[in-house]
Length: 114
Image 1: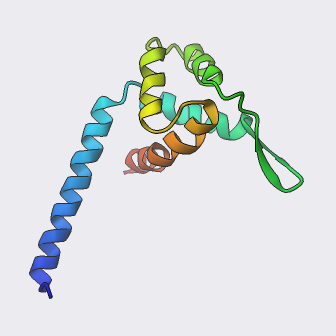
Image 2: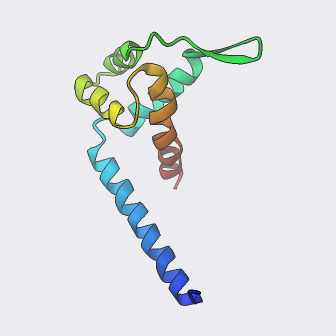
């Protein structure tokens, strides 16, 4: 059984690995925090609706809404951003709302409030 110091050392290693992973992910992100958070918020407000107690997606299984929204915000590297969405499982708008948001949304909100 590991002693208290060993557990603290291991915890510090894990924290450093997570911090390094986050720094690398942020460095590779081809869209600003503001644009990504706005897109996720936009999807939360417009892409989903509740019908008979069930949440229903209005997704057409493309990235058309993502492209249109980001284009309106002046994002010029749309193809790069869409490829990046795919790295997080975002191959259509609802998957961006679920998968990309799952990794990025809370982390970005937390980082902005720190």
